[in-house]
Image 1 (cartoon, rainbow, N blue to C red):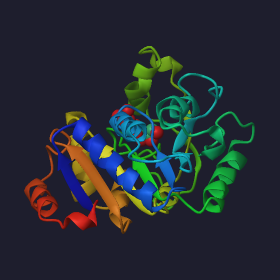
Image 2: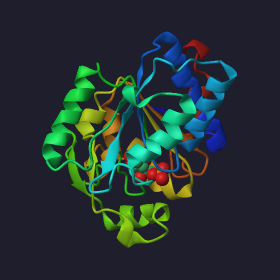
Image 3: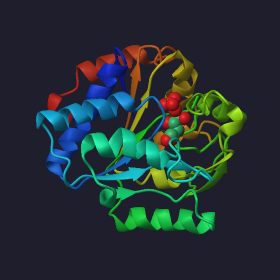
Image 4: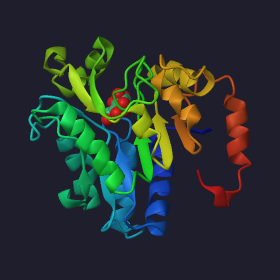
Amino acid sequence: MEVVIVPDAKAGGELIAGTMAQLLRRRPDALLGVATGSTPLPVYQALADQVRSGAVDTSRARIAQLDEYVGLPVDHPESYRSVVRREVLEPLGIGMDAFLGPDGSAEDVQAACEAYDKALGDAGGIDLQLLGIGTDGHIGFNEPCSSLVSRTRIKTLTEQTRMDNARFFEGDVDQVPHHVITQGIGTILEARHLVLFATGEGKAEAIAATVEGPLAAVCPASALQLHPHATVVVDEAAAGKLKFADYFRYAHVNKPDWQGI
Ligand code: F6R
């Protein structure tokens, strides 16, 4: 696992967007897996800037969603499909025909989960999956003690995650759904490159457990330790509890440019 410590969220966003842009230049129809929430927004903004300036062409790019609330109508402004449309597809000029996502309003949720895993496989798999991390170490919505080999399925959010997400629902935790469909940890690990982005002091403990803690389902993000190409991009505040921070800085500064992240 590589850990890159950046000065702030904007620098992290530019670094990750640059990596996505390089991928798209190499493989114009790359399938990018996107997370929602606050953390990835600087990535999408930086990538949209590159599209506007003509530095990258997203006309053949494809986008896959990581997770979705169960029970919210698809056109609800906070359904993750709406969020991905608003924050990713529209700014990047990518149409719904190039979008893959689980159906959180399906009557048969289990069948929708299986269909989504199959659709990802049929699409050739995700080339680069961007991840955020919960204060409890979740990736996607794989809450603590999720199976490390899980597939896309329904999960129950912890009260902590519902409280963390209440800010998207007028601060009212009662409006936050209890259930989600999330790519499983096994599904996430199939992406060819995993990039986890975390900013702020509130994520420092989860990041330390992810990077330096034992591989354990109690910190689902620690599953990144199993992946051959996982990059953790953190600002100084989120890096605040890393014992090996100096080594990570040293390794990044001395890395050959051609290697990228
Ligand atoms: C959302 C997702 C979650 C978030 C995490 C952090 O699609 O997969 O794992 O990435 O809850 O959310 P923020 O970035 O809002 O702190």
